[in-house]
Image 1: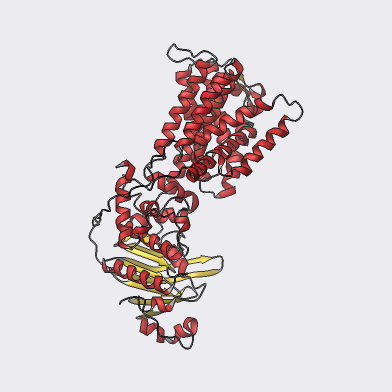
Image 2: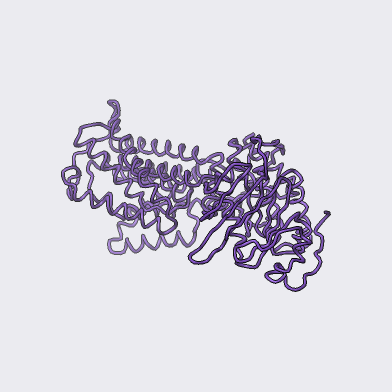
Length: 593
């Protein structure tokens, strides 16, 4: 079944989607060992392996989670200091120092995660940079433990159960064996449902949460794992260099790791290895240019960034796709997952009471109460700024309400995280169809099953079933990046339905669609409602919404000013004054009623 899974093609592997890149990285390691077999050349290869281990870990938080952490150098330095203190001062060997050096930065990452991981973008980067400065200050000032500016000398060489890898080739092989083990662990961690969760988490966190993906937990996992890898690299560095000084905590170490990740290829294990090898070896190649080698080094790095903005591995993968295109991957057999078991309940599928939200002094949603029964289509209309999208965001907890209650299937879910509400039975669409730029339509819909079917092959088979239901099965292998607006809406609807929700919330689904595409979408929404799904549609397109909805509410300045059937709403004086105007044309019926 493996070759039927959309993300498990023959080229998918440890390199994060580019097995040839891993082969290239391995070839570079072997070539380096052969061409630079002298003791100094092997030492450079060993140092490259240490950096490769740190960069593999950094690719998790930076490449997969998409968070610019500037603490990886700090974690690397803490691992080195843990080895220095436990090994040199307490007298323990590698069997103890190595796990301790992994544990110390990992525990620190978990401790600081709660305040730091809540921050976004550059605030997160600045916070992690500040952690490094605090660690550096502590290393310099805590002289009784860290040795202050002089550091810790006399760190023992690596010795494991009586076996000591000698300097040169044995030590290089030992380090690169650990790199290989780290690469396999990183590959296994990124497989399965995480393979689809990470791109969404990185490119559209709101969409990921709406699919039931706990991105806070994923960020915590990747942050802790990145720290563990950095600590392991720091332990190796301390044992190899036999001394630990505050320099290992300085910012240039972080810059080197970040540069290796970018040059090699963001998010790719093979890129981490290639970047570490290239940036470790480049200074040695140019060292003969006594006056201009730093300038030449910078020019080469700039040339790589300009010529291959996706990194060395990304450039290799693009070239492979261009010159050696893959054969079309076989589709799985579509499988109907059957109804999801849900506890019995009485009352509406979704009910909100007195929902309120203010932004500064502006009351965006003011005491809104509504309900949607099974199989009902509720329309929400109103002028721009009336609170329609904010209402959906409150119902899915993308915005936290100031007051009010939310019930799904009779269970109160007020203020719960978005992923918990999604798992409780609420799916949503966005004003702009939020499909991942990488991958095809089948990948996108399979992401909707990621937290339901932990088995990738089952997720793919069920995803194709829902693509078939929405008439988009022929788009399964089409890259999301080239889908036209109408097709993107069908795929997004299939992804939402793939979660088998009790309630489906759609935000302006007809925007940008032709009349034929609107008619097709209306038919799909009716089919979803006929299966028992409660549907809420925020829409400005009255010819699309009026014949589709069973009931409509109109918002103005955050309050419900009218509620009733489409005919009643069209003639309501308050609605005409606030939104529709003095006259409104009879709607064209999009598709069969």
